[in-house]
Image (cartoon, rainbow, N blue to C red; front, side, top):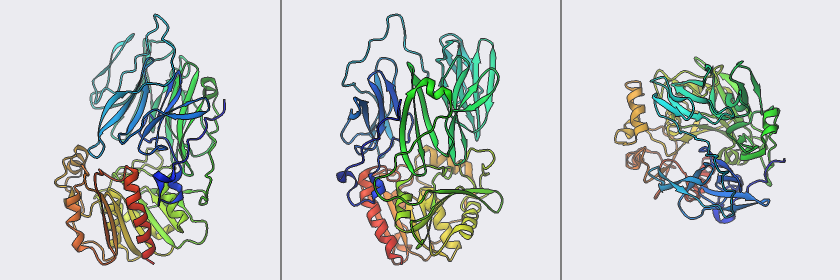
Length: 505
């Protein structure tokens, strides 16, 4: 069975004034990005703006949802299709909604109940299995995923996380087996003894078959540096979502036997317009640890370098597609996306330690990257914490001629009034390991911020505008939350950003 047809490109109505790479659509990054239903695969994608569901049937995509509310994380339970629906996108509040399919689906066979799929049980505790009963879990581990529906019906696979450590555990009537490694997802079962495990070898993530009895592992996808996300199988059909540095996130479907055979080659769809040269990945040596980096060069001579830093601070730069990074490369810039101390690289050969001091040690790592791979004038920026880190680096290096913050902050005190649980947990964990506040560097800053940001209060960032030098810009995005989730925000921010970037010289 061939790959499914590509998603349609995003229309001019959605991407007006945006660079060409923003026309390419992709599956949602918040898994599950698709569901396998008897009517055909259903995806959550941005092809119709926002995040909406679409069904592939008869060789074409049929949208199932529309309007301003997002629909994401489609799930098929054997009888109905459900999805998360945004109640307040800026506040990051979602509920659950049933989504009707436009074509009849087979009625479940009498006496056959849908496979129970218990969700994550939170921190520690237990999972209840219909055959095994209560399965006790370590008290301090976080349950990431549960896969109960083995063909034998008497076993369960659970993905556990404790800090950076990951463990897949299989429990059945004969005992317990486990695999410790950089695992990001688990499931489905390929046979009574083998279950799919997705694990990271930077910059990619590949699917493997793990034999729960012998411990043997064999690779199912590859070769190449694709980043595999969800893997599902139902009634003889399998599907997986994947992306690469030059390929938007897309769907592969085929027979379960084809996936189980291994050696699955994921074929990209080339863009219709111009594309930069393929991204490279390299590992640089930092002050205390290796620094894995993605490099995207422009088609010709670089006019300078953009250091594009991830948020978090425990975000990660994998070999995934980015319309923003690709647009920067097409605009003539070398784009460097490093992983520094604090990054959530899971590959044990490259996983960096946390910073001893946030805004100090990780800034030293960015400076090491700058010295080794930057060419010409340097502009540093990023999303959230990445914007903060860029502002710190600009104070330390005279080579930095501009800074951009997308939903970022300029001082740690900007976070003091945040009511977001994740931000408050970070501040508690960091304690006194935060860099002292300082005045912004004397270079132009581009600051774009959602006015309804629940994580970093826009007012706290706006209060520093008077300290920014000439050539700086502020873009407040009405109705937007943290970052730039919506197409409205992208249309408001990126055209102004690229004009500002051109104005730096």
